[in-house]
Image (cartoon, rainbow, N blue to C red):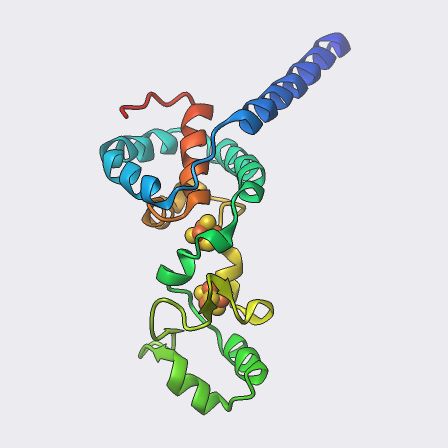
Length: 196
Ligand code: SF4
Ligand code: SF4
């Protein structure tokens, strides 16, 4: 039979760990300087290659929980309108219904909308035909309520299987302050020994 005192101790212990982790996160420096993030990314290229191997050695669910907690703590501290980098470099897939929705909102026929904005592959996949996204205006999305699912999802740190999306996540490490800071704090949380 389970020892209730032992169980209570482990619950209190976990609660304290979460509490102190929260304090540590709140006190941690958040880097938002895009120039510094780009420079760190070059300096940390070797370190990050080692980290990608290191993180895969951990339990995937444990990593997802940490990434999700870090995302929740860090995202509200970053102002996306000071950045806008994802809308300058992200290739989101667009579905027919999303194209219908946005063309309706713009009072354009699908034919006109498709000609003006979409690139279509032979496999039926559709993406925007240029970057930065033409709907980006003063670092804000001018069609925010009608933006695509791929835009809403980015940087996708709330989704499961972080360790299976390392390639796409690290593609944006050098330009997305949310990804940069989450990854840097994840290194600390997992006890990764930094090189830089
Ligand atoms: S539709 Fe809006 S959110 Fe999506 S890439 Fe374009 S500007 Fe960014
Ligand atoms: S790249 Fe990251 S920080 Fe920059 S606007 Fe996109 S989600 Fe926000």
